[in-house]
Length: 295
Ligand SMILES: [Zn+2]
View (tube, rainbow, N blue to C red):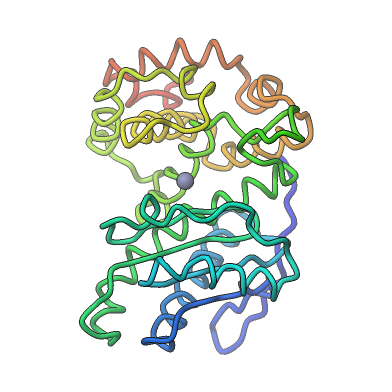
């Protein structure tokens, strides 16, 4: 079990108030109060979930941009990064890819989380009620990426010219872990039934992508890849406990080698798990019982 630092929590009138770093929230002008409120509320829920369920807290603030005006996202982010005294982004944000026609679009890096949504008729209570749960769930996914960077000592996920050493990854572990945490935030995976496992397995079966193929690339290759990554990490979490997914990133930060970190955390080589995973993906009984019968 790896020890983790947890932010101090103060109890005021029955409400847990975290002493962790506050995000630098940046929104645009129209409905700014409602936007600030929905982002603050989402952040508080996600932060509380991480502290209570996983004993994890961020050790530094980040910029949280939320807007229905993707074209201004770069300006908002630059303002937030300046406020936190961080370096500006070198490349422009691909807002079409990020936001498009999505109900909620999002992306994360160590210094920021970007979120965008469609403009509603009015920024009122009905909007908050309708969008809040989805926005919060997606923030749980993006917050997981923040924690992964932190545990893996701020290693980037993509290779740059100045860096040819170890990286955060593999991508199926990065995205699969975030997907499992996003799921657990809504429905604890410990309470998963056979039917739930079947549904997740089903989505993983729609793709022929192997874990190795997603380890080499810089992405999990689209929605199908997310389904495979999610199921692989769900299997690891069912067998080793959900905290083991975070233990892997902590081990990666210390050992600076993916294979060693995988073996130390899960007690088998990546190659052995991959072979096992191909069976878990096809065989429902094997997936349902994985980690439940001493297997
Ligand atoms: Zn992600």
